[in-house]
Image 1: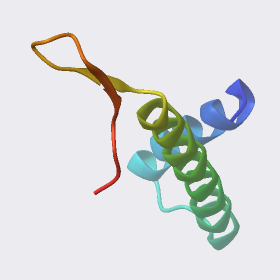
Image 2: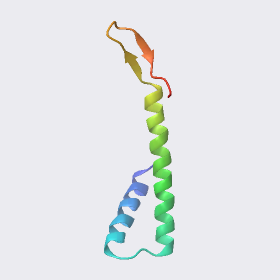
Image 3: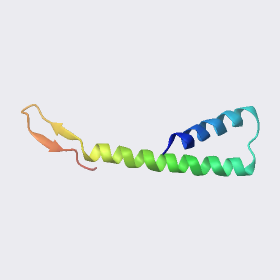
Image 4: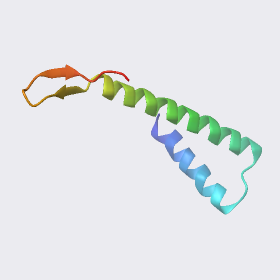
Length: 66
C-alpha cells in the first residue's frame, strides 16, 4: 500500500474523531482498511514462509504451518 493511501486512512480516522463521517467517507475508509489488512497479511505470510528454526544442535528446518 502506498503512502498516500496510508495517509488517507489516518486523515479519515482523525476526521472521525472530530465529526461524523459521511457515508462515502465511511465506505472509502472501509475499503482502504481492507486493502491494508490484505497487504499486511500477505507480507506476514511471506515472512513466516521464509523463516527457519534452528534447534540446539544447529539443525535448520522451515517453520511449518499449523
